Amino acid sequence: MPPVNLLIKPASGLCNMECDYCFYCDETQKRKQASYGLMSKETLENVIRKAFSYAEQSVGIAFQGGEPTLCGIDFFEEAVRLVKQYNVNNLKIEFALQTNGYAITEEWCEFFKKNHFLVGLSVDGTQATHDKYRHGKKGEGTYQKVLQAARLMKKSGVDFNILTVVNKETAENIDSIYKEYKRNGWEYLQFIACLDPIGEIRGQREYSLTPKAYGEFLVRLFHLWYKDWKRGKQPYIRQFENYIGILLKYEPESCEQRGVCGIQNVVEADGGVYPCDFYVLDDFKLGNLNQDTMAKIQERRSEIGFIERSRNHSEDCRQCRWFSL
Image 1: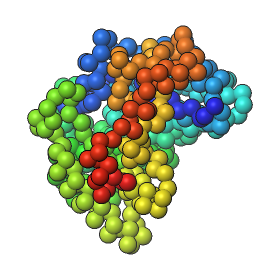
Image 2: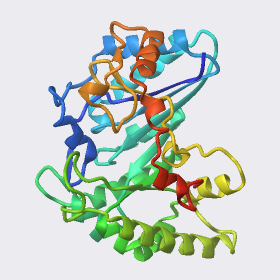
Image 3: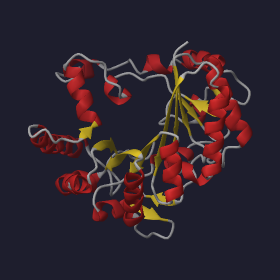
Image 4: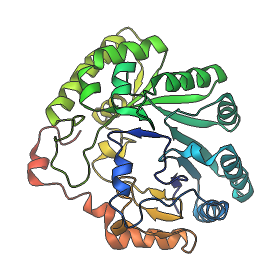
């Protein structure tokens, strides 16, 4: 049996912010039931118990949203307690959490530090580019609160990285964004391409990222990064580390750069399991950990051929000189 990786959405699509481009908000609207509310303690225990009864080697548990901190610290303390209870074989454990940072306090930072959580903090560049599309519930800017969250985590010694959505605004302003991140001392960066709503013609939204704009963004960012690399002071940028690894014949750890889907277990607040956070849709549901075993869920993954279908690249794609990347 392989390692088990869980991506748990304990608050479903609920959030304390309203970002214009939120892909998960759009995704939930494409289901029969948009929100499953907050995960119960019973469901949490079933998820953790069944993961550890199935796993060998290691278990990775990441929390994502919506905004997972809406569940409160008590929920996550219970999660840590349950992991200790059911990890009878002393498997390697990795915790992670992705947050918008809007409600992060010193108490949260103490929890992250104590329990060795890697935190992904969503920041879209400078105040101008961030506040363009990442709003509070009343339409207000959120940058200052997120910046304060970063400062609190840095002060508390929390391991965190910066997650930036590449939309039209951030792509056009990468020079000032890169400079801002350096000034803030942020050394671990991940840039995530913005997606248009499911089923829409691409490029119709104000924030839409065109293939040309994304390509130009990557080239410009690489030049900025490479300039610092020659000085031995470059930040860690996930995409570039993977690209260089591929050129050196290493397997990329990022599924988007591997060219084929990996084995994921995305768990919604009701215990429902899906093969990928971009496919948390009714047609792709693999089962529910309140009723099904992990083994049964993996059988269902094979039945729908999710991973196999991701290998079906068009001939035009295969003929591209950059297909290996």
